[in-house]
Length: 171
Image (cartoon, rainbow, N blue to C red):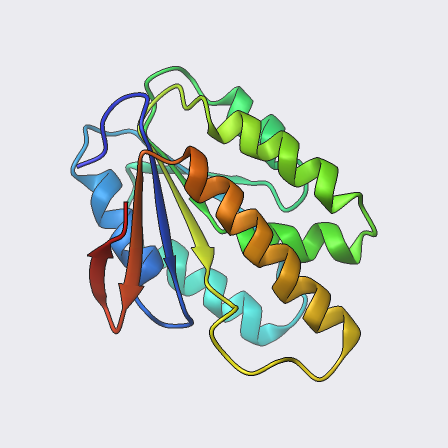
């Protein structure tokens, strides 16, 4: 169970159970819970995914959409509030597509994550275990995500790797 002032980092591949596990960790704590969402619905399929995630959560969850201003959303969370941030890689892709300085922004966000003011659980995709992407943007994304995941894992109190729905404690 996440503790106050503790950062738990949950990584895994697609459909590995990251979000469900992260939600279960937060739901072990007293509500209300804050869900900081980074996804944007640019098409019907993504809108369905977002709706599926919202439907899975109950009324005890407050949702803040933060596809770009993630550090500000975390800084606005009340002290002691259990926070689930889902997910870093969607935020990273949003910022890359906006042609932001992702190296600087990732460093700034890592600084915010290094000082959680409550039990915070952060979800990210592990994207570096597959084939090398066939285009420059996808390779850059994979590399940036790998670097960012390493930064966050370094400041996290606990790191969990989800494999086929099973949580494996890494740190």
